[in-house]
Image (cartoon, one colour):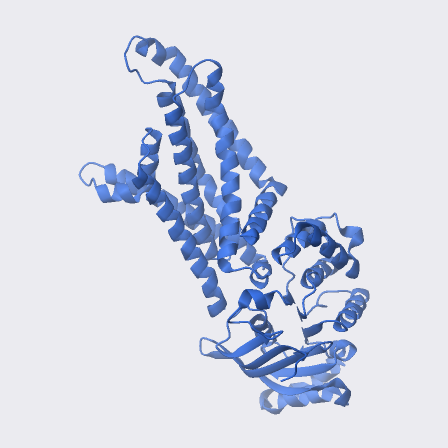
Amino acid sequence: MSAIMVIARTEFRRMFSSPLAWSLLAMMQFILAWIFLLGLSEYLERVQPQVAMMENAPGITDLVVSSLYLWAGLLMLAMMPLLTMRLLAEERMNRTLVLLTTAPVSVAQIVLGKYLGLLLLIVVMVAMLTLMPLSLMLGTSLDWGKLAAAVLGLFLLLASFAAAGLFLSSLTRQPIIAAISTFGLLIFLMVLYISGNSQGSASELFIYLSHFGHFLSFLDGVFDTADLVYYLLFIAGFLLLAIRKLDNDRLEG
Amino acid sequence: MNSESLIEAAELSRFFGAHCAVEKVNLQLDKGEVLGLLGPNGAGKSTTMQMLTGNLAPGSGEIKVNGIDLLDEPRKAKSHIGYLPEQPPVYRDMTVNEYLRYCARLHGLGRREAIIAADEAKERCNLQEVHRRLIGNLSKGFQQRVGIAQAILHKPAVIILDEPTVGLDPIQIREIRALIRELGEEHGIILSTHILPEVQAVCDRVQILNRGRTVFNDKLGAVDSLENIFFELIYQDDPAVVELADNEQEVLA
């Protein structure tokens, strides 16, 4: 257990000792803040006057906050491959993986440590994003249940991105290949969702397989155990594959 | 079997596809002994070392480190090994201090012990003046020394060094050789190289590999001219290169 934490902490720190984590957080914060302000001003000027008289009108959490988290998910679709590509592929390229495989730690500990380190960064990112809707507390009241579901949904979505990226990073020694294949896989899962919804070829199965479908129900404020299980299986599956791949390296050389 | 035996490797074989990299190599290392692993490029030195450090599973054969079976209890056995691969496994974006403490923590030392171990290793490898600098900004010689510090800091019984003096200037080579001699008094060391004088300068015993097989294994004291033996053994079963032998001998001499 402690070896996992040692690896995770160092992984997390190394991301902050290069400009990587800083530029990622700054860029995400800037773009999402812009989207947040756009949504907010639209709500104030156009939506609020219309819905003011309605009963059970959609509140600010439905309109502004949900779309903010959806945007965050879409943006991270493009960013996550850049974070995961370094985890194992870069270590391979720089021949530093040997340090970990020679140390008295198991392959599972290496993979979990690396994954946990990235999860910490994801937590920081989601926390910084969540400050925006929290700032609305100054003037209005929020739907806490919906906000919590959106936060959890985004976290699970990003965690599933990270697990897939970690596995693809274990396959190659070229970080760029790892990034491209991760990006391809994530986009493919989104395309599955789109094609599952398209007229004519609508398919429940495609929607179920795509991680976006599950994310959207979180954004609607629905916490369904099936969605949670989907993400946990997705994550566990890819982590196991990564462990198997690294183990296999020792056998195949 | 000798009770002082630190490494006991029997009948190690390893194929890569149809190519046999190492064939039935026996290797033994006693406490306080510096063993030189010698051979031309592609003789199987690095493959043997990767197997001894648990980075590559042998096709057949068994390895005991300090009496512990490396294949049955890899984590326990690995804690007795320090390994410097051909390319030092250093993270260029960490400082020397951070890196060495991380390595110590990976070997299961506590926070305070890790700092002490890192300090000792820095002192042994003369790294005090650069301890706050980023490893990526250090010269090749210093990076190599960081690699050696990493291999010795948890005071392993066995230290395995793969071509530790490649790319160093003559002064650094002399320093590193002196360090190896010094370490050889309390640890067992396996050193691979293809520089003959290096073996004569630091090793007690030499084992020569050619095409994956042991062709010579004896104390250095019993050897008159290592060079003659080396060329005789390497070229005896390869008539194609016999005519080259004389030329190369001149170059190397």
